[in-house]
Length: 240
Image 1 (cartoon, helix red, strand yellow):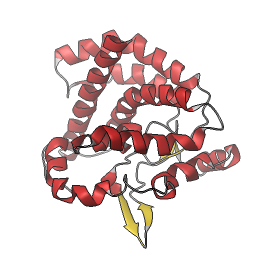
Image 2 (spheres, one colour; image 1 turned 45 degrees about the vertical axis):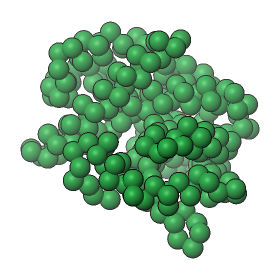
Image 3 (cartoon, one colour; image 1 turned 60 degrees about the horizontal axis):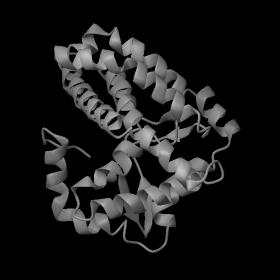
Image 4 (tube, one colour; image 1 turned 90 degrees about the vertical axis):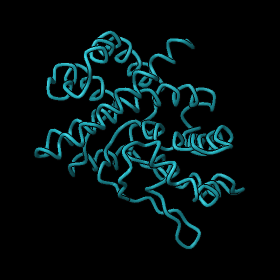
């Protein structure tokens, strides 16, 4: 899907006329259509995940994500997309970000295939079944890092809280073999913060491999996700 809107807010506002159709996804009484992807991802065994890595699938595990923090903070090109105050805030939050990576790892949820850009624009329905497409950012990582875009995209709808809860519950339920729902929700809340860090990592990598001026355009997404991350960290501090 291509969009000429300058911001995500403008993009979602353009989608509002299609809200009823989109929200039908969350109003279904049968969970399979809502949990199809998470059921598939949860079913991937360690051998399959290792095979994906051997085939060249990117490793964006929590360990790699933690390593990326210091790499990003020393990347003058990436930091040039931010103002001085934002860079200073990031430096201040570096210990907390690393601690959150360790905290999320402590829930012992296995890495799996992650879509990398999972939102409603990358889901279609055919013959009553969901099709998840645009796997260009697919990688091996923590299964909840898609959360920031997956159920975060429900925020533009009138019943956003209920829709978000239903979608989150259906998604997390596939990992009940590893932890009770209460702990899965705790893990997901941490993952939502680190999801922004994941997207910084993703967009920084893309920008670094693009020619000028296209890399500058992609760099604006680094700015966007840094600001989302700073907001998430500030909220975490207020509520912790």
